[in-house]
Length: 324
Image (cartoon, rainbow, N blue to C red; front, top):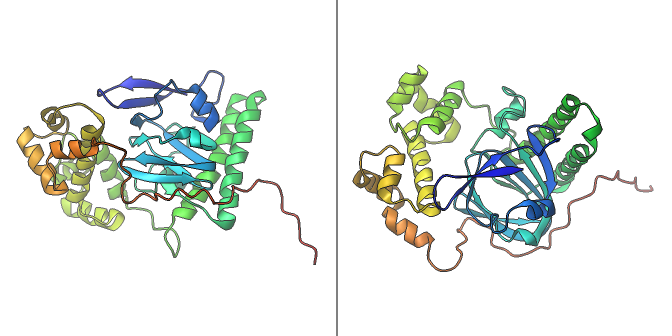
């Protein structure tokens, strides 16, 4: 499934590796299989993924943390963790369901499906209702069934079937996440390219002018495109990405602030501390100490309800028509 790559002392980088003899690029397994396969003690640790992980929950309840936000998983929930995000499993033995692991590039590049999958601003947690819920969980089961039974097919045929089924699931999930009034318009090419450049280079450059020059746009064009797509200015967009990585390193590694400052492109630790305190209201050391205080902390944005009363996801059996 995955292999570990140690980067910082207290964070695991999980790198996708397809099991021998299985379709390249996608894997479907149950949570029970995930628990059995994972090395002892690994699942509760902070993990940074280089692949997509979709969890469709059939039963139970737990909290799953993704980049400092706790998400309550219960029957009918769908969690999507994207490459680069840092996750921590809660009590993974308390839930059952299906796990879908997808390598970047498996979905057709340049398509609407790939755009949905690769957008880091999409919601992490979805709770489809009614017909949407039935359709989503039927799509999950269909994908799992074809993954399990397609070994006798030619590898390219099997892979293409799984790609189509996964695409249908992704578009269904995107429809649930769409705002009222329909899906949001696709972001401008300028923003898409800027977003990719920031993700690649935020640790080396914090200046919008540098990105504008490298991409061939004016800073004003990037500012307009970023405001339209992300609701913030281009400089704010860059700073938020730097802050997210700073929080990840402070929370999940033992690196001193001076080394974190260097990793994030600051000239010295003092400039980093000033930047962090201005945006967070805490010094880096105080932020780290607060996170490592006694007892688990569920952020306010989490749904901390322990209720497991949600109805179980529907089966894919056809409905019987009611007698008139």
